[in-house]
Length: 231
Image (cartoon, rainbow, N blue to C red):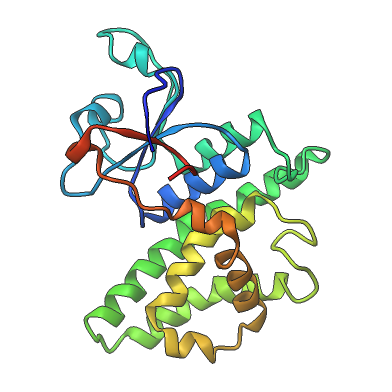
């Protein structure tokens, strides 16, 4: 249902972008209310580019009344992990930040950085190799598997990546492992990563993921905002 509450933060989001998925998951997990503006890569709203010129999603505009005023600072967060942290520091009902131990948060962030800086670039190469039937496909996949195998090892004796409790790391990595699983589905289903498959399936089958993947009308088509999770 379209929303008109001008006091709520606005999230610019692309449905299948893993970084935008990450942000939506964090906001839903924190039970925060934001208005979502759905965008597409080829036609980005001028309003979004005005506050975040780099032109990538997600972009969270916390004070959009200020953003509309020239030379007036507004709180803009345009990094996906920062959006997750913003939301979960406001409310963390599942203790995903494991606030009782600050070293745990740093360990989560270190794993997420490795995902973003090492695994993600390798994943993009693997996806292209599969798409264009390159001879390097197996070698490209094997570079991804170095990180995947580490995650499998983490799950050997635990239900989640940081132990028996779900954490920020699980939800931050989820969209990227989902992508990896979809590149070559046949290979993935028989790959030596049964614990990771179980971990991924549990997340994908949860109602939270269904909410996070809800499709909204494009902002530039209707100029209507929608409450995230209420579509």
